[in-house]
Length: 183
Image 1 (cartoon, helix red, strand yellow):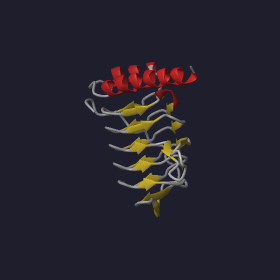
Image 2 (cartoon, helix red, strand yellow):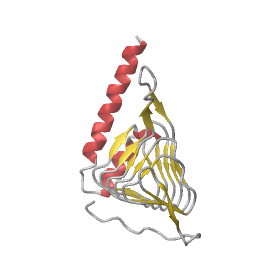
Image 3 (tube, helix red, strand yellow):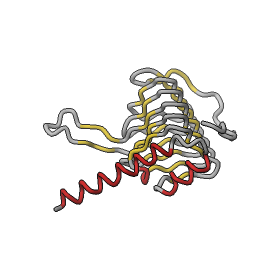
Image 4 (cartoon, rainbow, N blue to C red):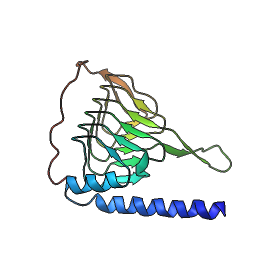
């Protein structure tokens, strides 16, 4: 009986994820934000998720104020996925907090939270893996694969991501502005 209940919960969650995927193609921030919030995504004031986002369990996703998440982002909420304030996420960035234990005989899944602190910028097509914290003001270059924590105001790039520089402005206080209308 427990297996049947677990399977039904999985089917229900997949239906929600499918509805959210369809919602991601509505060219209205207001409508998308309303639907995302309805299904459990916590979205702060002035924040937006551009079109085409893919969700895995929206209830564990929290987005701070004035944060923009670019087109076709993958937002994995199977564990906590937390974005701070004034975070700028480019297009096609993937955030994963679940993976498989490749050396386990049953290839079992494991999960760990992902935390993106305030004033972080993540370039296009970067991948953030489970258990990673990207600290305040850090920058992740386009195409980087982040496998471990990134210290504050550091610039990382590559596969796997490693430090390639440091951000000079240690006291950011900017606002990201309004999102484009049809993104």
